[in-house]
Length: 208
Image 1 (cartoon, rainbow, N blue to C red):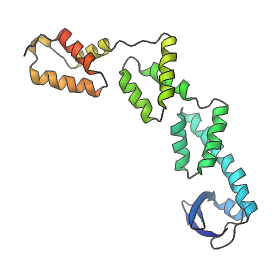
Image 2: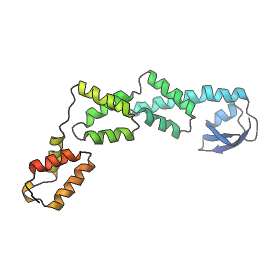
Image 3: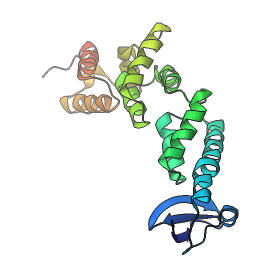
């Protein structure tokens, strides 16, 4: 296999292309060690060593370093490693490695997130947040169940009322336009139309 291009990515790293296709990123010392030179043949032995030893070891270390700073979902950690130009097979190895030690655990992450946000965000908003973080819906459903089994519960009516209080909502002096604005505001917070109407009807004395 021929190294068709070695493109500098930074002062210390370069992107390597084999047969015109991007293969991986190596440090300058690794380029020398494994005889990676533009326009020259790369031996199968060196290629295998890079994919089976060098990159997996580095990806595992990178994943561990990332997890020291904060917790990630599997998808978030995958994307961070992908930003480092690791091949998919290498990323999978790194994810399996950290998951094996439970350094990543999507169910644990979801339950923890729900617990931390239960009093300030609606269920729908929490689910939207977690889905954006790459949480599978199946895991999300399991997380809600586990959270409830641990005694978790939400009172969305109380949450809505607190938001209305912050908006200085006065049911005795609120016109149609203001009610519609408040409805839209609460909907953006992820509350259902039923919950919003219930709260506004409970407090609002405005009539059409």
